[in-house]
Image 1 (tube, helix red, strand yellow):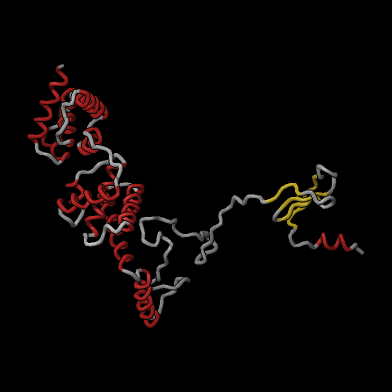
Image 2 (cartoon, helix red, strand yellow):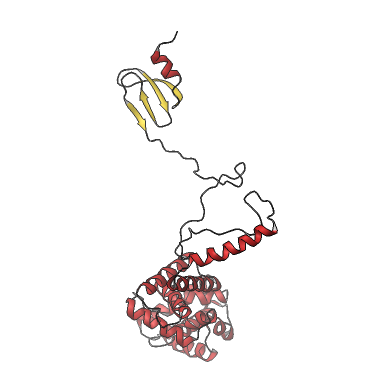
Length: 310
């Protein structure tokens, strides 16, 4: 008959596997369970808190083929930071079609759930502003980082009571413009206005409020920041873009483009560079991409020619 110690050791539920290696202290028997590796003779803890490198995911709808449990990551682009819940529509968790009575019940529950998510005016304003920012950044082709920073800036503006008496969408558009400037990926006010429902003047005014009240560290915008955008729009060669950047750097050293529209200066430099590299992009094509007049391109081109000549 087995002794009591042997009985308890044999039927220990925590024991998963027995390692035949000996203890470094007493040369005793070493056992590994779900939590730690210990010596059964002297009690030395050789290893503990082992890292489980497997996924900690589970999806109850389909446990056999999809073991995902976690949802989308937290994000500032949504008012509930992405951890809110949504009520389904026509099918239950098993994929079965819901009855007509159940669907009517879910309609009522969905309506009350939507109201409960935004139970204050501040929450409703935030939802509208963040939706506008997501829509505008998507229309402008901006990245997720720009979108999240613009949403965080909108939250800051709301916390500083800058929305009172002002248009929510105008503040949202101003946030997008400001964040583009902060990341040195500027977009002109005209481009922001094309994807916004607000007028150009209201967006300018809202940006002025943000810049003044929040003291944004917005760097000055030069022609070089607009050059990649214009070069990409006209599909210019890399050599042409590099040459245009060199021209703008020389113009900046001699203050040739100071006080001028940076988009026009970048367009003029790209046109001159295309002539030097033999690509010969038309003035009208560059002017359309830069959203300036062809006359502006010609004027900046002539100004930059003086830089090349000297």
